[in-house]
Length: 217
Ligand code: GDP
Image 1 (cartoon, rainbow, N blue to C red):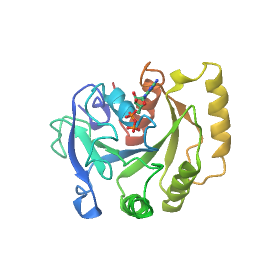
Image 2 (cartoon, rainbow, N blue to C red):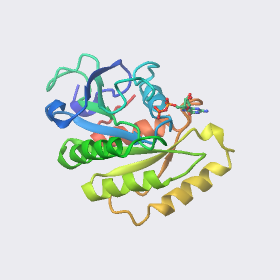
Image 3 (cartoon, rainbow, N blue to C red):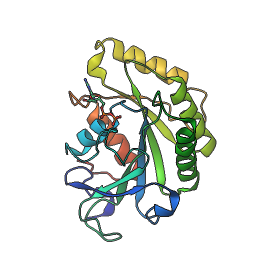
Image 4 (tube, rainbow, N blue to C red):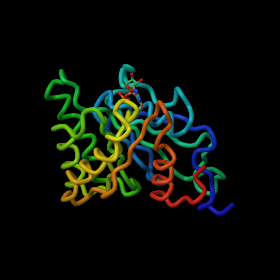
């Protein structure tokens, strides 16, 4: 099967490693897409919903994994020539804890910025925004970090089932308008509900296009 036609989500994924500092990063290989967002934005739920596996990404309450970049790959992926799609999903540590001490925030920023700046195989970061809250100050800070690192990113609204259906297109337009001048932002914003499954196929399609895989089901 040509590489570009390997199915992306129709098989099990596994957690391969947590990266607390850059020395633990896996060697650069397949294309990566990363997910970022404020703690509790629904990041674990969205990753699990995308791959159809409830327990893959753990909630940010799981001790130990909170400050690491968590790597997921298709189960059985064995490098070049593998029958599985060559890509990794990177779950970035959540940010914006109300009580986070400054040194923890600094550590987060350093890990994330070093990763963003140096990772040639990172194709795009999906920055999740809670539909009920919109873009907050610490989201703005992260977008600025991404602009500085010149890493392409796209905004994804989460939990759209929690707001009224007619409010979704309005929020999408408002959010797109807010990032219009940001140099590394992909102009279109996506909307999702992990609970209801809304928007998941659009996000899967966007990810597939980003990593260059045609048959993404
Ligand atoms: P994380 O901290 O960003 O990984 O967030 P989680 O995935 O752990 O979700 C945080 C909370 O939001 C949990 O209570 C989830 O059940 C809830 N949640 C996540 N996604 C959705 C969604 O699409 N709709 C609704 N209604 N709740 C959601």
